[in-house]
Image (tube, rainbow, N blue to C red; front, top):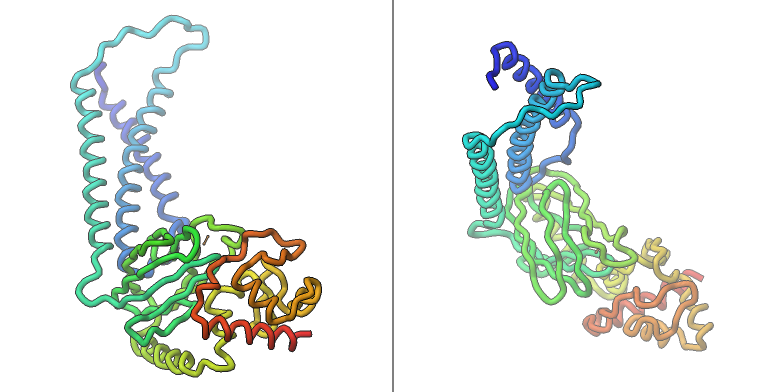
Length: 340
Ligand code: CUA
């Protein structure tokens, strides 16, 4: 079949219209969240690289298709077969070679981006990330092991997150950083982040990990290096204080607030029993308050609380350092008595 000049112009016009509409759809709504790290920038480059290839292919296909619909439509009463055609070696070669080149180029671009995103440079900041049902905690081993339930990072500094889980598989995901990495019990996974924008971003658990999965959120605060240094210093002092406020810190840092209500800790979780009622629960099971609390913290479900499913509370608290466990139990006794 020979293509006339007029037909070629028509084909090109149809393809341009299809390409133009698709490009507008790709560009105008804001499909992606803010880009807040170097790694996010590279990942977005891959996204746009693939999107542009898709738009070009789509425009060619829609151009050819609509041209055919316009010009080669069969008449309503025409039930004859079309003319026989033979394969075209040139065409078949082209539609094998071009996709091969496209897919190979995408693979190369991805490999380069992944390699760069995994490279932390010579002197990264290390942060230990611990996930458990249903909370995140962060430790700064290079800063006297200061701990926090929000992830604070200095802007412009490459940070390596060394992540592990105390119970089931979770996943670390900050949309503005784009990367997603599983957090797995019994092993340490790593994620490299170089924040580029000061700001506050949501940290989301991106792996269905139990009843409280949707509540397993925290915050990433990207701050200037000077603000970060000030924060590390102030946290260091708070940790050293310990004592009376120690138990509350244990309660908050271990994620109890995600599931329980307790006025003294400002906790409003609804997944587990309301801890302001601990004295009446203990009385119900004929247990002294301190014995009841210690048993339920270290061996959950020993006394089954009606109205709550068993097997939800993690069995990891028995492994807390003794001083922390004692402080936690003292805090629970004092605050539940005070609450009633
Ligand atoms: Cu942890 Cu979902």
